[in-house]
Length: 234
Image (cartoon, rainbow, N blue to C red; front, top):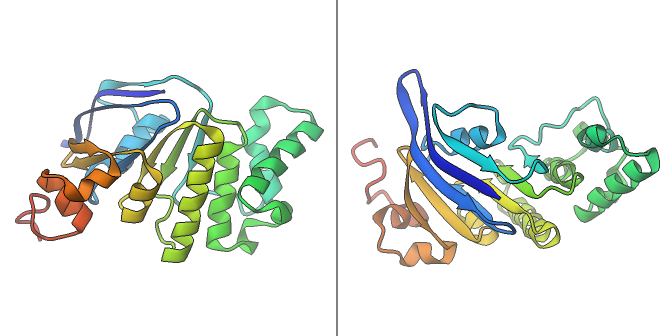
């Protein structure tokens, strides 16, 4: 569903991505992990079309894409129902069909009773779940998550991860989650790709990370100072 080939991107002469390649298959969730500044966010912006690559190619085998932003990105002047309606505006559905689709999305994330609430009346976790509902109302074939559990306490992070798993099982869509949170990539992803200094230094199943002989993933997974990442920079 997603094919990334030889991506390169530089800012002010500093190359952030140095030839990154990978694929994501239908129904597969892939985690892009790595330390701050390794190129994770840049990679996601390239995939979503917010940035253009200097070199390389991105192929998305569907135009039905759902995005879950790090900060939820809800419009405070609109109700929850109206925020989701914006995501459906291009489909020009009859009002009844639109309302049904919106309520089905809210039911899936446990927010059926909050359709007429405004974002500033919701908790941080409820705002995040609303952004999930907005991402899935178009029945996407590809779902992209940008640091979905950043800034949340451990309990709420677990709840959000549970929703991600539930959506995977319901939608069977291809997905990418950009994260550095251990529980998120080990619980929600089928495969993880570790970036360091703009290149892929490890790829494998999350449960393999702690038992790998690759020094990069061992250091990252165990969160130790010993290893090749950030050596001489701390």
